[in-house]
Length: 85
Image (cartoon, rainbow, N blue to C red; front, side, top):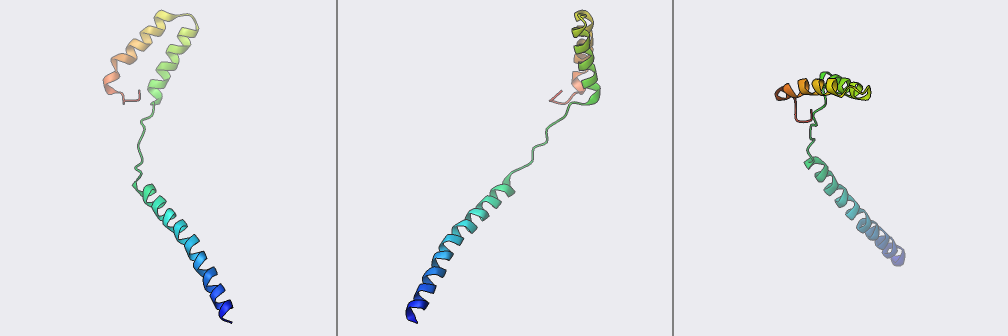
């Protein structure tokens, strides 16, 4: 009977050793996740995209002067654009 109790105690003890590090690792991972901050990334507004697409179309049509004129107008408004644009 003592052998059975001793064996049971050893099995339970070894299970605790295996379970504790996993739980500790999970807790550490959750702390790291909680510390991560979300960073907002600015997007390209449709008005700016439309002008850039228009300049690209003009360049593809072999009209570089008109394409540069569109890009110059976009550049003139650069003070109102976000960092991504």
